[in-house]
Every structure is written in structure tokens, then in C-alpha cells.
Image (cartoon, rainbow over all chains, first blue to last red; front, side, top):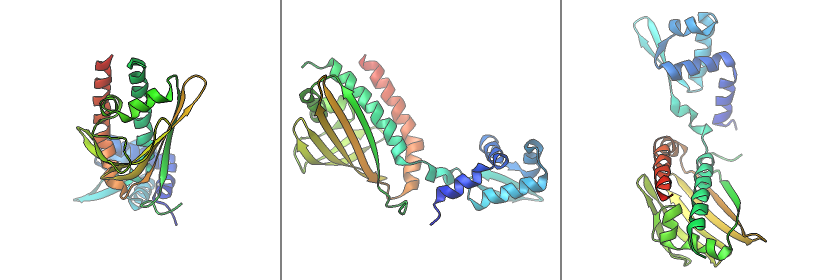
Length: 107
Length: 136
């Protein structure tokens, strides 16, 4: 079975596509035209990348007259964040505090 | 790999500490000492004892599972987004103790935890830094 993060990694592996996604993370809601201006590739190429990002659930589109606006769906990155990563740093900090306490305690 | 919803994972933190196991045991089992490095609590070193760890971001529901004085301690560690067990092992060394913590468990649902982690966690960590800074 294909895992959700396999799709995310594959989708974001392409540098042009990743740059488009990062731009949307940074600048919010943008049209294909605006994204093309900064992407260094043609508008059809940008549209194709946006389609892939959309199918992976990483962006959503919104029609406004003749313009299509794209924005990120940050929740789609959730499978990349394991609880273990959070807890590892939590416990390392706890160990630091425990050692501080032990140094202050009497025998 | 199994379904993400039931996948069991674990975190291990291990550290050589220049203090004897008996002293570390006190820090792991006396409520006023636990409060200094972990969270406020109503811990008792008694198997089956239910206790809570509380912080301003919420809390953890715990049940003591194993108590082997100066050697091993484990308790269930459940939050609304995580079902787990925390196990401590103390091994004497020539210079002190090798302290090992393993947390094993799974997330019933990934998404709420992700939100909790991104919203609640940084707040908790910064609060913690404030408290630690005050202790010195």
C-alpha cells in the first residue's frame, strides 16, 4: 500500500514544483500568472505542477472570474510529522532538567 | 509498515548520569521532585496507581505499571492524541547510572496531534525555558 508520505515526498522531490509550493507557503494566495513570473518556466508547465500539487492535496484552487488562485493546504504535511520527533526533543529537554535537579539535590 | 493509525513507534533517550541510582530514583518518584523536571503531578510509586501530569497546555493521564525500586519504573502515558508507555531503566555504572527512557506507543489519529504539536508545543517549550531560567 502506498503511504501518504510517499506521495508527498514524490510530489515535492521536483525542485521546480517544490519552489512553487514554497512560494505559496510564503506568499499565500497567488494566481498562475503571478506564479509563472517567478518560476522560470512556462505557464503551461506551472499549471501542470499545480495540478500535481493539487492531486497530492498540497494546494487547493479557487476560481475568481477568469483567474484561478492557488493556496497551500498545510494539513497535507501532517503525515511527515511523527509524534516521535516531538517527543524525542521533549525528553531530551526533560533529561537536561532532571540532571540540573540532581546537581542541586542533597545525597 | 502497518496502517499509520495503529503503528507503534518508540522514542529512546539514554544518558550516563554521574549520580547513584538511589538518588535518581528519588527524582523519578517523589512528586515535588518530579514537578521540578517534568510536570505537576500526584504520582505514587505503587503499581496500578492512577495519576495525572498537568501543565498549562493540558495534561497526561497515567497509570503506574512497574515499580522496581532503584532499577525500573514504567507508566502508561496517554493524552488525547497519544497512547503510550514510558519505561525508565536505571543501570549502575562505575561513575553513576546509565538512565534509559523508552516511550512506546501510537497515535489514534494523526491530525489532531499534528495541530497540538504545532500550536501547543512551541508554547510549552518557551514556558519551560522561562521556568528553567528562573531556577538558576
